[in-house]
Amino acid sequence: MFDMTFYKGKRVLITGHTGFKGSWLCEVLVKYGAYVIGYSLQPPTEPSLYRLAGIEKEIVSVIGDIRDFKKLYSVFEKYNPEIVFHLAAQPIVRESYQNPVYTYETNVMGTVNILECIRKSKGVKSFLNITTDKVYFNNEWEWGYRECDPLDGYDPYSNSKSCSELVTHAYKNSFFSGSSANVAISTARAGNVIGGGDFAKDRIIPDCVRAALKGEDIIVRNPYSTRPYQHVLEPVCAYLMIAAKQYEDIRYAGYYNVGPDDRDCFQTGKLVDTFVKCWGGGLRWIDRYDGGPHEANFLKLDCSKLKTIFNWKPKWNLETAIEKVVEWTKCWNSGGDVRACMDEQIREFTSI
Image 1: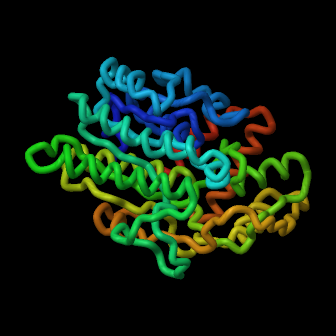
Image 2: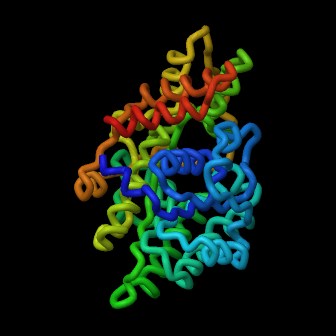
């Protein structure tokens, strides 16, 4: 683990800070003394981790649309961030079929806007664009995709994130290379994340949580798809590491996969089995494959590059990750201090 105290006093801008992953990223940064500025729409769910944990009280929060360049740039002018994490996105595959134009506007032009702000600003030294494992052209093969494999997501969400990657590459080559290489620019392609406080629709663990709290059977729409599942702190801390390392040495800038080991690439049905075991109380799940829009059946990442360059490796296996989800959820459901629960999980994770 790199030294998290690097972030003490650093001015850090996070787009998409009101979302699930953004909230965890904010909390880690606040815990380690960063000055955090968030730019995002209102929280995308009700309830939301962002509000339940009181994160808005600990940071500078600007509510705005990533498509609004003028407002976004005004935040750069006012706060002059040193490090930028770009998470703002329309992140749901099924939603992208229903609203493809909005998905492309947000995920592609949002990336253009953030990079244009960085190009025009004076203070940014490190930028990380958070994308997804779904950016790759999916051959449904059994080995992990590498950073050099072709980008061409199938559905509007996945494809828009592939485009976001290409926009980042073009800006890097055009404006931040050679004698103009004054900003370290990277992308991070993460697998499926789970963790306490995810209330999104069309995600398997939130669906499990909702069913468990209601005492209902869990409906699983595609139990045989294989995905790389990991606790949200795995990619969040990897993002922080990449951004810090390239801040100190621009030669670390690049394109990185962030995913679990092969043992944690689970079929969805097996993932739900593990949740049922951790939750207890006689839960069960039902196979309710609905035919739905196209989604990848088999997908995993080769993270050799991240492991080799940074000596990085995953810390929590999938069973531990699900135990942490159940721990947080039961704390929240019983009226406990969810922020304290988050902080304890962060302490446990970073102390390994």
